[in-house]
Amino acid sequence: MPVLINQIQQVLDKYNKQLRSRSLGESPANQSELASDVVSISNEGKRRELLERIGDDAVKSYKEQSYKNLINDR
Image 1 (cartoon, rainbow, N blue to C red):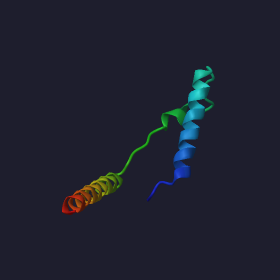
Image 2 (cartoon, rainbow, N blue to C red; image 1 turned 90 degrees about the horizontal axis):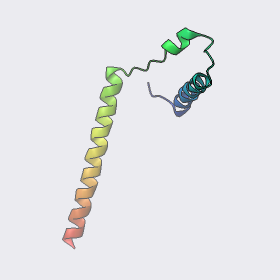
Image 3 (spheres, rainbow, N blue to C red; image 1 turned 90 degrees about the vertical axis):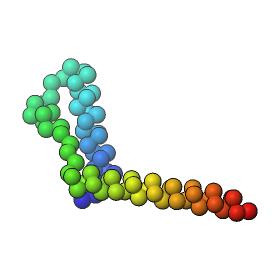
């Protein structure tokens, strides 16, 4: 399941709000809410991210090599 930009923004906004309340000395209304700030990435998500990076690197390398060959052939 892909993570949408607005979902990430909502998490960051919530975290930022919690940090501000801590710095102002306010105690959070629900202490268990702070304890649940855990993000985990599934093995499938890690695998997809790794494959995407490898693919991006391979395409970049291929483009650079093709460009160098094009320049050298002139």
